[in-house]
Length: 228
Ligand code: SAH
Image (cartoon, rainbow, N blue to C red; front, top):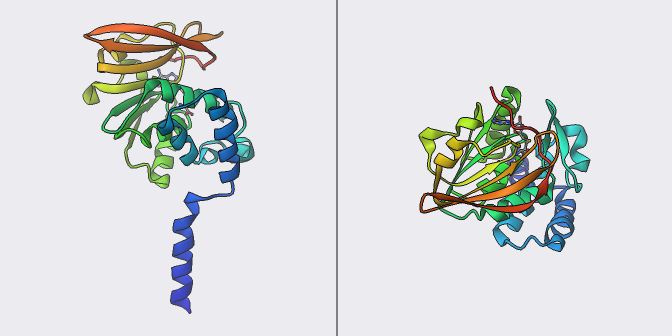
């Protein structure tokens, strides 16, 4: 009897993460906020369908985790709106076998989404508490291909460069040169650039034969890119 109980408990604790009470809300978010608004990349859609966004927001905001908006995560920072996470992921065109760098770990949600698609994700956060919390969450949820650290993302992560994908989730006034240098040939960087206290342009910067080609994607509003 006791052995049976243990087996049952093990069975349900293993099954739980796949379908949780938020699965219907997550499905609705994917359909209404992503697919109906033109997100078409299957890898992106599947990743946002998979990652339990409610575990990346403060507990008292879990019920709003699938709302069509950013949410506060403490320290004046925010987790981006689902559509923006999907758009940035789709435009970055991540794929298997690739290595990605994210600047601005925040809640860890964007890194978790990327980790579903690429081989490895390196992510840097400038607020020590957020860096530590995200690292703990990646461990608890079993995101073994994410490496997180505290630091100033301006400098990138030269020891791990070059990166096929770079996603920056805080807004600098100009693209940091170290990130350009650490982008691989044919690599793609997606970054909000502009006035940190107003709106910014979301820019795709591609490296082709050593040169950077920029394409404007849309207008966005991100938290300021800070320096240590
Ligand atoms: N990608 C995050 C979004 C967090 S908001 C998510 O999915 O939740 C942007 C984050 O960038 C904030 O946590 C902020 O502290 C961080 N940030 C700002 N400037 C930074 C810098 N120079 N280096 C690293 N992180 C930075």
